[in-house]
Length: 191
Ligand SMILES: Nc1nc2c(ncn2[C@@H]2O[C@H](COP(=O)(O)OP(=O)(O)OP(=O)(O)O)[C@@H](O)[C@H]2O)c(=O)[nH]1
Ligand SMILES: [Zn+2]
Image (cartoon, rainbow, N blue to C red; front, side):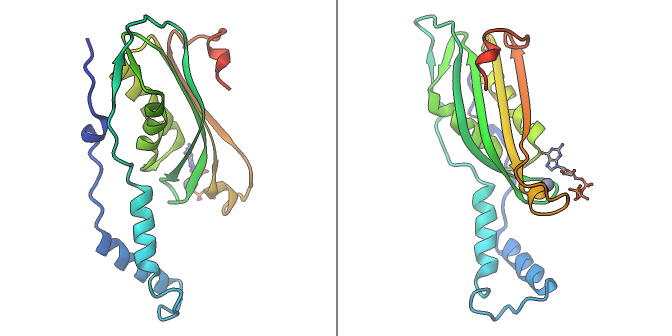
């Protein structure tokens, strides 16, 4: 039988060295030919370092689960969970919505934990495929459900603001496992 583990403690997030990040941003601004004495820029290295630190740090949470004493067999699906992450290739945000569901076995998550799980894995330098897979693996490993579905749809700023500059495109990724692996009425409940 699987036991519940705290994913936050088992995820070894790298330490963020804020003063070093701040110095690097100051150097970056100099490389961009900016006047670091401009009153609006003077404090920018600190702000940018703090912003990235925040975007790379999930909020602490307790990962409460409950026994499925009533033997609920249906799909639990939390739709339209807003999320944002940072693309590993350009360090630019990608943002969109996640739909996360599972077919319970013996344990249930409080609904909010599905949204918190999305946040937990989003606060990293990511690619969307890995992010989707990590959320699905986490549900599998913590709840041992009869099936898991994770669908994510996001706009990548690295495609919108630079490079190909195709604003508004959405990329959809999905992982389905167990009884949700095959097309059917349960899977059709996912957007
Ligand atoms: N598979 C995948 N690709 C991503 C993701 N985020 C960004 N990318 C892509 O990563 C690729 C990086 O490709 P490169 O050719 O090395 O970088 P680039 O020259 O900046 O590419 P362009 O964006 O086409 O200008 C780009 O095609 C991005 O669109 C993601 O989450 N998953
Ligand atoms: Zn990118």
